[in-house]
Image (cartoon, rainbow, N blue to C red; front, side):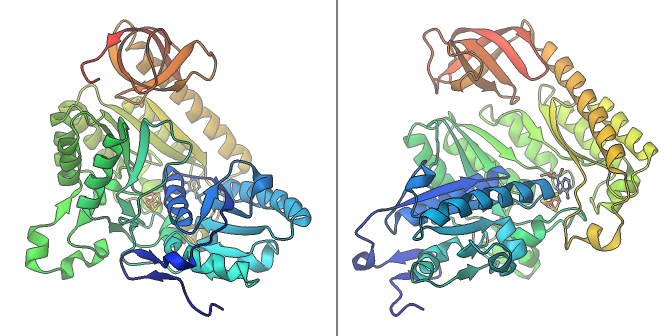
Length: 483
Ligand code: 5AD
Ligand code: SF4
């Protein structure tokens, strides 16, 4: 154990005793899997590590410390991580001083078990415990194992300035809430990321201002359930009713936060993800329509088109309520794009339930979507109460059917854009051609244009002349007024 702790957490921020900083720089190799929130967390981790003398390396063989930020959402994600751990094990055999730490959702789900199952793991750190990393690293460097998987009531890392990793200097993630209170029966997130809490709006706006000063052009506000954002001075969302009348009266919900962000940097494009149908208010849609720097795209997972399955999933909305919300969105923002997440083969899903999913997709004609086969997650209500009884072959066939239908709809939506002029923000070189840029329009479609005189970070008006189901293809007509 530590004799003297140089790294003190004072309840708000991490205080590092300067004398105790490591004089020799150490290399950390950090690999991230899963959702955008995990990638955003990795930037917080890098910030904490840089304070104690670690620098990031992209070369795994140069690492003193390997960290893997993990995802538990489906079994496949966990298998990928286990494969990587085998690889790290091989490197460790030749480098006895190398330490390996597991971060994120798998760390939280498996806790101490990780140390027994994966003998090469030295450290296990859950998503709310990153401020404890300096202590934990000290412990493993002293030869002890180290674990912190305590979930927090108020940790939001609002006081940590993320170190942007692999950044193009244009797009950045800014997390606004942590955890989820929804308890969808299939989902492991409420167990791995804990209860819902929101970050101080001022710290969010400050981060946006700093990003704007550094030249960033687009931010995505992140949370498992952004529409549920509620700031009343800190604390869990579920404890809001216990707050004082003054706190309640001055509380800030997601529509207010979104407006604050839009007004704070009118030239900064603002996106947000993920929205939850039951929590998305008309006010949010109105704020989106009022501010042209808030992108006209909503990622609105529905998971199934059948009321029976929605109920078994503990989704707090019916098919009709979801479709009514979609109608309200199109009424207020006719050019808004909507994307989805869908699960096939949830326990007891019948052929008729599956047909209802297809018919819901037919009604909405989503711009794009993420589709998954149901994967039973240990500890969830579905795993405890329901049989994973849809045959694997049937799951696969249903998945192919919804993927195929989605491709048809994506192509339909993209074709509507042909001959239109759209504004894009250039993000990177096209994967397929060194002579082309890739950017995105407000609706979140990827748009490819010849490079010409344009550069990464430019807002360009583009005439669309062709498309595939995944991409719009066009030509720059000149810089847009947003530059
Ligand atoms: N099986 C399959 N897909 C899942 N998702 C979440 N949990 C599971 C699971 N157990 C999907 C949902 C969610 C997205 C992030 O991952 O569609 O919206
Ligand atoms: Fe999981 Fe449902 Fe929360 Fe999304 S809303 S993170 S699916 S529990």
